[in-house]
Figure: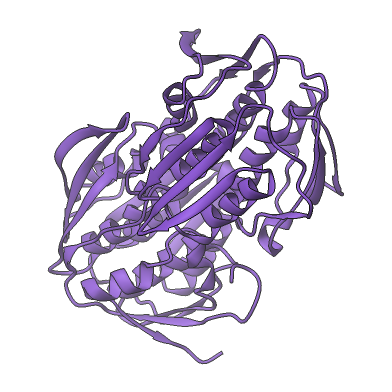
Length: 450
């Protein structure tokens, strides 16, 4: 579906006021990690609320390929019988990760220090994304890789037979790279240390501790220093996956820009390394409140209440906030189009190497729908037109990117004229119930002609 098969063009028309509860799926980042660490534990890990989107299902299949017993119990409940740290077996076939950039990079890390060989591939989008940012630090453990020109998939990873612990300074803010190194460090002797100049999502550190690994985080000269003691025996866990803040971003944003909306989005993960969008929206003047704040399974959660917000103003988003909302800039730029004044988003060059070049994709699509956008290598600026004032009316290329597709469907819900995307199929990678959920709340979508 994501980058393969027949495209599914879709039209989004001006919506009725969004009302009710938006029960979005489980957190994608936590779902990937729960399956992988469950497979590296000894015994049965039980997971509830797992995101059953394409990306996570690819990770589940990969864990089966490496020897873990992974069972779908129904209703978002899953069971993983792990093989222990260093217990992965060699897959019999190529491991196809579909569109899952997080999945493939974390899995490469998890197997990198086990003496087996695995070959990874993915869909057209994933095969275009460079893997060097992960394979370079994994080589320090003794891992070898053989891929296409530019470090692209398909790629074979030859796990280190005698891994050594690593000290690695991240050259960019990337939770995927950090997590791959930490997962590789699990089967290396001694201590693996990661220096993180800029904080990124910390689900891996939290979950490693939950499974019984020794992880110490200290601050030195403004950087996070993460020290993992290798070769632990991970204990199985019971994990309740909070709902995904990156998925919640879409109904929240739509409620803010669709006149008359009043929406509750319950049980959303509010990890400080992930909640940057919601704080940014409140800085813009959004009527967005955090209700029933609590802690579940080591992760902070809250119910979000979002109401139509006609008085939002453009702002300069603090660049240091980028890591905590990197996946949410596309939908933020949609909200910015309905605010008054300019919204500047800087320090976001990471968006150039996501499932698509998200800066270029959003800038092109917004311009086609009558919004003034300026952009550079690591920034873009949206000139807001005020509530209900975006012309719309264009057909947009989603570029096989689920977040681009959903962002422009949300734009169509509040624009003057309908907005069409060329392919809605990639949405299934992260938010398979998006169309049904948004339709139930008041969205108006219809299939378009090719």
